[in-house]
Length: 421
Figure 1 (tube, rainbow, N blue to C red):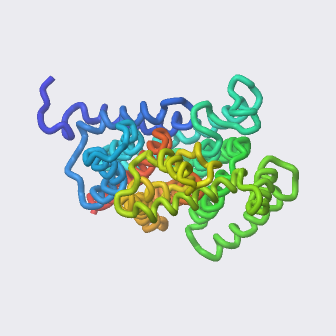
Figure 2 (figure 1 turned 120 degrees about the vertical axis):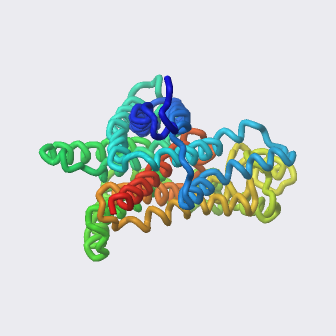
Figure 3 (figure 1 turned 180 degrees about the vertical axis):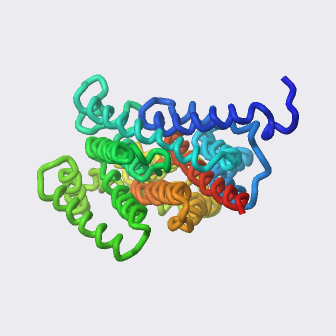
């Protein structure tokens, strides 16, 4: 077939655009419900994006740099002979691929790209099904079967990302032409929120409760047009009601909160508890960073370094199986030193500033993308205080692609608004 001009103006572009939008839909629909879903969709997205790449602008370059920084630092560690294994490039490479996709995604139609995010709705019903199945079917149990998961990631990210998918579903934009079905769509979005919350509850993960706090605030702010008085008037009673329901009844979350409080109360005499081990890992992680502030210990080197310290009686043997210090920024600081800590901050700050600066956007699709992006960034930052998500490929891909998609909607809408002037 002959092309009459560049690929972006050729006859195949509309088909590539539709396939790229379908891949975005499938990414959200399958990311937490199908093993390998995030990776399959990310690689397809990357391949489809290649023919549609255009010259990036400055804002795209900043986002790409923030997403891919950990990959370049890890690659330099490998090239300079640090004792790391090649497979540790797997997770940060997903950030690199997602950053490349951003260049093509931002030239799609903002409305269509926003509607492709409706893949979040089937995802919530998928995680709800996983939550029920993994608690009631022994073949799918995680451990003793007391906590739900999805068969390929543990209950902590399963719970927190299920809640995130529920809130993303809640704020999905409804185009004008769908207004005749407004009631049904709103009911579907509320059901999707309930499904995500149910999965989070089944996980028994305290991370699901942590991430829910900023997401509730951002959701109320989104629908309340970010009028502070109105937002606080709804947010504070909502939090009080949620707290009363959790702590005033016998339920899974009440038990997990009580367990955490007990762990802290007995820490001085028993560190072999969930919270006790975290405190020990944070303490050891901080000491590692102080000892290796410039280069770090190498990507994926926490386990070996901890066990070396245990043999020297510099760390407690209780944490000998820990693969990371259970804190995202501390893990990056340990593995990559100050450059890693800076890269971790940029990973949150650059997209976070973009999203938060557009929360009051008049365009419904831009406002959705800003709120959704803020949920992803702020939510991951909050749960990253007590766990590490970016060492597992699927979770790294989930964050990277989500940031790329929501940032692309904002950039595309700004471009379309500029062209319309």
